[in-house]
Length: 383
Image (tube, rainbow, N blue to C red):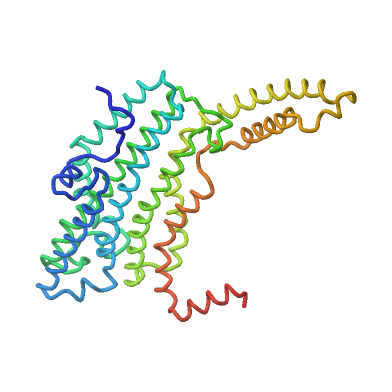
């Protein structure tokens, strides 16, 4: 039996069902409590082991800040993002049906695709593969020279050394973090697959739609929720940079190309999927220009024959024909300015800010607060 579009969701899998059974998932989509439980509980055990073994000063030092950021900030943000995003994707599917972007003839195909996504998201196999990938990544990570002192488990590099603290972090905390990251990549892949499938349907795109994207403008609202995921990824990268700077293994100037690379990767991951609809929007724009310009040509010819003559010029004032001509000109302008990708400057700024914001605290490692304040003062007042 096909799943109705109104039931579309990206949430599912064994971990989600476990959270539901434990009462950590509220309303079916609010998984923030589950994220806090996973992150805070694993961090608490880490801290207790460090206190018991007398290595709490090492664990709480700035040189291993990455482990705290991953557990206390990144993991809860991952679940916050899915809690914000899932209702939006459900609304998107409902709106393209309600607004008849997907015409009635294509509804069975849409229901088939949502059912396919539903089966994959509820399957145990993806979570098992993500867990296996996380474990394998933890095994090979020490050989990859990853940035940050806590990016890989090593008896010589990990806080706590050959102790229970180090074992807990390397064998539980890091695999948990990587499992959740791989799990998010899987969901992003599911979403991209769904968008591609939708783009293959016979869509009813209206080039004069006020959203400037022929009726697909709500996708911008959906992808704005990915800002929380970008914030989480950037926070993890920023913590790794901080560890490298403190350890002296990373130069501060390496931050600038890394930030540019991060922006490029984020754009590819979270704006790139929206380019799937470029062929659809291009065809809608071309067809719309042809249709409305043909309509305009016929209308202005009739308008010219009716009103340009001197005999009827005095009756032109207040005629609805003038307003209709203006409305037609506006429609053609809307079609001409239609976006070929449902991305606005506002969305780009939101995602860019989410990527760069966690990098700002790194400035405190390069400049003392007083010196940084002086530089900002000079910049603001052009001194």
